[in-house]
Length: 71
Image (cartoon, rainbow, N blue to C red):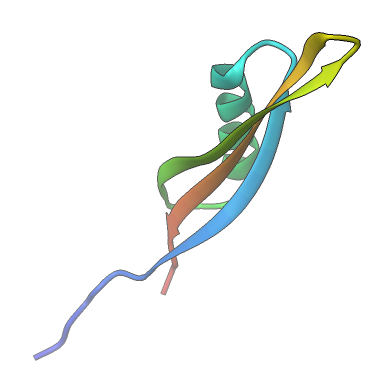
């Protein structure tokens, strides 16, 4: 009997946007999708803001990108 199980990998991506956290996630996902095939999910691991002179100038996210390894 042969087992054709799938194996996934997780890689971290850090992305930023001056707009909001949702846009930062989208920026990170779009960039990861240009390089990685078989993406099956994302997890927002961390959310931070960059602040200058009392104002938020960038929203940053750390994403775990989950993708299936090709055989």
